[in-house]
Image 1 (cartoon, rainbow, N blue to C red):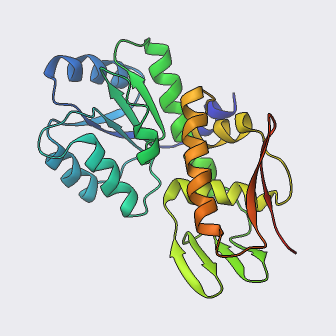
Image 2 (cartoon, one colour):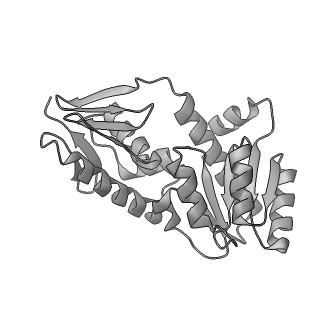
Length: 237
């Protein structure tokens, strides 16, 4: 109901950029998406998809991974390097869960049900809109030496600044909202990706490890793994 409320408040159609080089698959899924009320633009090559992305306004990027010219991996990298938090959903003939590590929000295997496609896309879009419109404090002081600015994704430790990747920023933001509090892996996965699966948990574990490496310059803070419970950001304040 919450997701439905958010989506029905939008005055214009949701704009999806769909990158798919297989003509048959493109026709099938474009029909599904358009019947669901989405506005869909198709790109059959990676270069064309990137050109359209750079010049258009999009609510979601739907990617096949095996594209000519620029493949799905490169497109994900280019989008996330720009700092854009647009939801990216993989729609491919094989399981590409490793794309979650690269910055994709979700993946679907071709042949899944129409209802599943609609539900997963709606969740990805609604989740991103919530993250973008949530009115929360932008600057967090994690410790006397460490601050994190959610608005520009800058982590500053003892004056040394680093721009975090989009998903790293979202994860650290969740921890900053609830410092010294255990957050379950299920809750974190559902907040970040809209669904909990073992693949999402593996992706979360990897991101937490990367964040801990970046935080280790400040010995007073760390993300702790609370066995069978979740994770907790502890600080020295």
